[in-house]
Image (cartoon, rainbow, N blue to C red; front, side):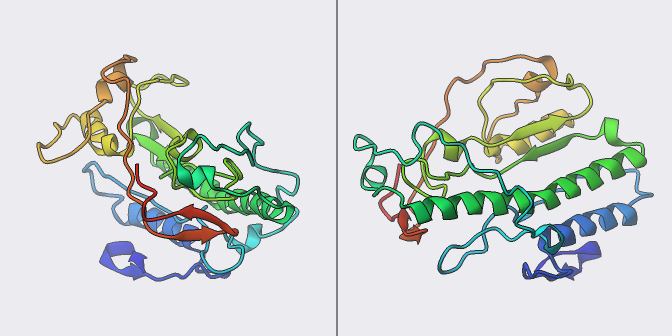
Length: 260
């Protein structure tokens, strides 16, 4: 179940019919905006979808696209990047990486298909973003609204011989897309200041002119975004405690002592 409109609950189960979760969440958000249309107060909407996460299970679990995009012809020629560490032996890395056997041809093919199903599931995310931004524009509030788009983690598709997964400290697992637009932000600009998701709420509050509560973690980086400044920090501390034994696509992806 997920929060619905007006305190109600919208129920979905990632089925392949009209209850496709990305669409349910997008439609509920648009309805929420309609219901508060006459409310002059500022608003905050946190819109989080499952896509492109996999539907976990035995065998070779993949992401589930919307039924109207679940066509193998879509992105049929796409494949994840064959980076230098793709299916590479790395005996000098920590034990979970150094102990990985080479991927078989089937494991590599399954990893490539996982990549394609994730792309197909993301078409619905594209539709959701387009609908929400277009609706803000229709209401005449787009240029006074901050819109932030990001993801919770990176992913691996054969890097260090792991056909899929995320539970590591390397760039392909840590780096995420992070886009923001809104009043006072220069279009097309970039800022190299390192940040994490912990900084998002203090920064959004700062953009709204609200001080960060003392009880809140993270740093307000709004001045860096608004003024094009850099600095303040050069490094980030990354910590992880292994969630337990995770074996997917016939490879160990996580373990209790995969802790760093």
